Amino acid sequence: MKKTLWIRLKQYEDRSYPIVIGTLLLPSLAKELRRRPLAHSYALISDSTVMRLYGKNLLSLMQEQGLRVKAISFPAGEANKNRRTKARLEDRMLKLGFGRDSCIIALGGGVTGDLAGYVAATYQRGIPFIQIPTTLLAMVDASVGGKTGIDLPAGKNLLGAFYQPKRVYISLDTLDTLAERQFLSGLAEVIKSAIIRDQAFFSYLEKNYRGILSRDKRVLGTIVKKSCAIKAAVVEADEYEEDLRRILNYGHTIGHALEAAGAYRIPHGFAVSLGMALEGKLACELGFFPKAHLERQNRLLKKLGLPVSSRGLRKKVRPETLLDMMKSDKKVRAGRIEFVLPLRIGKMKKVRDQVGIPVPEEILQKILIRALK
Ligand SMILES: NC(=O)c1ccc[n+]([C@@H]2O[C@H](COP(=O)([O-])OP(=O)(O)OC[C@H]3O[C@@H](n4cnc5c(N)ncnc54)[C@H](O)[C@@H]3O)[C@@H](O)[C@H]2O)c1
Ligand SMILES: [Zn+2]
Image (cartoon, rainbow, N blue to C red):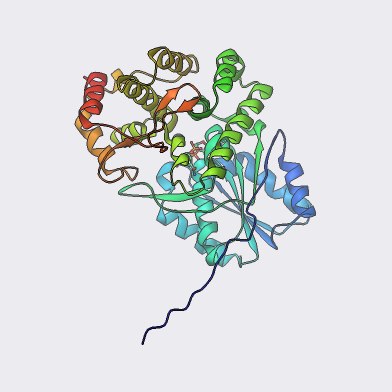
């Protein structure tokens, strides 16, 4: 005898969340949490640097509002986005008595957001969390969209969960203390957003590059808002990366391989910038991305202090190594290296209504050899 029972699950709950962008938001955030609490108690998680710069202040602002909050920090750096740090944070939370009625506040860069978000996704089967990004990269990319996770020795972000935050607060003044390289690295993702979706935004970046580089708050407000809106629209259309969401990986297939080959000594955005220069070239070579658009892309990258020539990597990185890395990347589908490639500035190419473009290995090889030899 065989009998089948069904458990019928539907997602009724609305998981929409606000992204609040402004300056000096931390005091208003503390007040808002008192007015509209998300939990009985809060675990404020930051890396050591951000805890010193902003975490202590947020902690006292929240305490002044009578909120139950405890701070937990971990050593800064990508090297700590791992299982060991996750376990330590969880043990600490247990020890401090955080239960299912608590909420995590991830205050910091993408490392903090990914790590604390992943703790939130699994702690006692999942508790709510808030993102307060403090690097440009985290503001325009990592804090929005619900990807959380940690690195394994075998590769980046190999363990994780799709888990959306309840709220995102972006306080632009926190960018004042950010190191120049970190800031420029975030700009690569801003330019990426414009290329994949919005040609008018690309023109805005071209016109306002001085304001961007001098970190003019009004200009920063615009570029953060625009980039978040682009990411939000893409994530709304394809939360679990079945197809469209992959366009956010423009420049990242080669970029990730460059990062790994350079043992993560190149900042992420610099690798993405080089990746966009090479993947743009690939799209040109395949005959659909006009050369004038490639040149326009590269000009803006250079104006904003980002690299477009891989010559500096000659001798350090071999084209064959990059190819092997791309083949083992989790973005490879059915054994073929697929890329997301621009059709023109502001629009990505589709083939049979899919954004993944399989690329013949010989063409890719040719471009890598030319770039690195
Ligand atoms: N989840 C996603 O969708 C997504 C998207 C893109 C990137 N990421 C991840 O994000 C990570 C990179 O993020 P990141 O570049 O923000 O790195 P990060 O979090 O390590 O921050 C970089 C450095 O800046 C310091 N810092 C942070 N805010 C500061 C501030 N306001 N002033 C001074 N110093 C400050 C940090 O202490 C750290 O040393 C990677 O692990 C990447 O995989 C995730
Ligand atoms: Zn990126």
